[in-house]
Amino acid sequence: MAGFDKVVNSYAEAMAGLEDNMTVIAGGFGLCGIPEGLIAQMKLMQTKGLTIVSNNCGVDGFGLGILLEDKQIKKMISSYVGENALFEQQLLNGELEVELTPQGTLAEKMRAGGAGIPAFYTATGYGTPVGEGKESREFNGRPYILEESITGDFAIIKAYKADRYGNCIYRHTAQNFNPMAATAGKITIVEVEHIVEPGELEPSQIHTPGIYVDRVIQGSFEKRIERKVVAK
Amino acid sequence: MALSREQIAMRVAQEFQDGDYVNLGIGIPTLAANYVPADIQVMLQSENGLLGMGPNPTEDQLDADMINAGKETVTAVTGASIFNSAESFAMIRGGHVDFTVLGAFEVDVSGNIASWMIPNKLIKGMGGAMDLVAGAKNIIVTMTHADKHGNSKLLQQCTLPLTGVNCITRIITDLAVLEVKNQAFYLSERAPGVSVEEIQAKTAGELVVPEYVPEMQF
Image 1 (cartoon, rainbow over the protein chains, first blue to last red):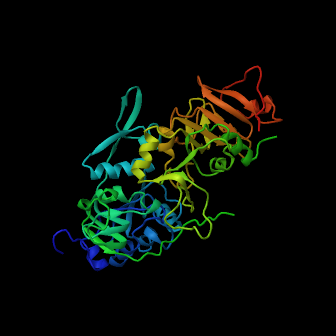
Image 2: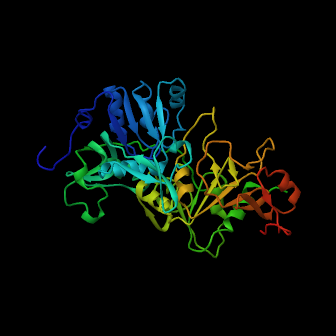
């Protein structure tokens, strides 16, 4: 690599440095906008004891769900995990811990983590099990709870296009959690559909500036659809 | 007669005003999109990051990168915008979404709602529901008035773990439209052919009944 060129040529290189018991933040919503190849590489590496921060945990046999097959995940921090039988089984066995987090709070935890903000107040979850044990405070007569931000050892991202410098553009609703996740990793890896040369992306259209990105890899994606519904 | 799911959705759609931004939860709320009056325009927000959600795609339009919060394939309407999850919840938590419509297991006279967790059953997660009830300007709960065993879902105090506190102001059930205020349910409309007595019998929380309760108009 030279200068700002962040392109790596193998998944092994892309995920180099991942170790047992690390925290990995993953972009994606359901199976939409997930870094399929990076997840597959994590399975190949057999890294154990992982804490995964992601809105969902994939489905049986695809997405983050494949990391459950060899019990690589110790803890999931997610808003919704209902699509996965293996997940359910490991949760009931006590082999897997889950920290359910409201979806907006999860996005904000990543955003704040990446922006150097250690915690923030939100009305979401006040008076519910989510607020239990958390500091609360009133502002303008309304109660809020204090939520701590999240950072990860790694962040794994799926983008549509990135230039060699790591500037990224997402496509449609495959954007979702990816931009926040990208800011919150000590090492951020972006798997993309298309790598382009610096200058090919319009600077004002870039969603994730390259400063947040450490490695870029050309991916190949199945882009599986979780719930195909077509107009009658 | 108790309303069908479609009729509840039709009554919900009557609440929308021209120019409203609306978030619809899974189930009956989603059906309300089918009954938006032809003379008004509403923009549907989907919390995974889409403002201006359109109908499901044709086979030709199918695109894995275009889904809604229920993970179903959708399209975007003309004038839609797409953004990240933090932006999406800034709209929700910042009070910019005019209406949110969602289902519930229980609602009580304090405006508390329980909709995500039944102890000793598998907990799948709250998704965006806690953010939506904490943030939207107007929240409408749609549900059946009683569960399948006939137990009221409109309570003096919720028994299940809460989704949000002091946030529900309007409920549309298969039997009635009710406002939540002053620690009571105020009956404002009844389903065609449903008696006040039946609603009274199926409402466990304090119910205030005005002298005249009109039938819903469709």
